[in-house]
Image (cartoon, rainbow, N blue to C red):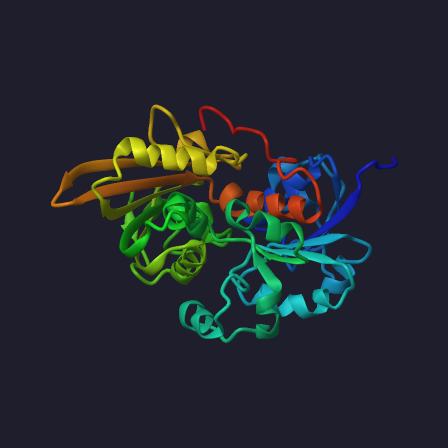
Length: 354
């Protein structure tokens, strides 16, 4: 059957949770046809071998092919690969004229090679391409993404925390020490099981991991500094929770006492009034259940009582780590790169109850 879709896409690394979300939303995209999925797993098997929800939905199969073969006759490639693996594929893809790339790994989010090596514990496989990638946070870089050929899609924790703090950075209010706790679901650890994500020790448990050493710290600091933060010192503690999906981040900082609850709420509502996927709830604080399964994020705040000229402010952010924190945001950037409505295939509000 002939297709009226305007663009063709391929996914490389489609057998994980992020890849499954990419595939699902590309299959329902009104303007983009998914034509190929490359993977080292499930080669020759239908996509439903990795994602049972795709049973009888598509005839596509996982293909064990090179990056250049995966990109043949397509307009855009989306990379759902682990760190370092993604960067190793980029030179072959970048050599193809006019091909656009959206990478979901952390390989091209940082511009500092030394910072990458410190936080990711690897030598960068493709440092010569770092400057070519635009950081794919539409709420900050929308116009740059529109004209980009290569996009580095942000991390899940990074997106949550950046959206919670971005209005303060832009207003020149984000400076010095900020404490953040981020609670996340198990799908953020990927499809391969480990001792830390095994159901019996995750389902009825809360535990911190990588305290003060999570690899998203330099990404968040770099992004918010570019947005206007000064001397930002992020102290971030991630916590694993008995959820499949979702992140709730809570940040604590102090502002001059002139920044009351009403004034801060007005700042946040104005900052996100025109954003299609960021909500500032009117009568409640952000929560995971409200955004689970969707590309929407929520932000909110509570300003405490003033004391000695300062006011403690608590910021909140919530999103689905696989959608706005992962594949959904990658598709949002893909839409911008292709000149499409950035909401295409992303407008569903998610299920209720989640």
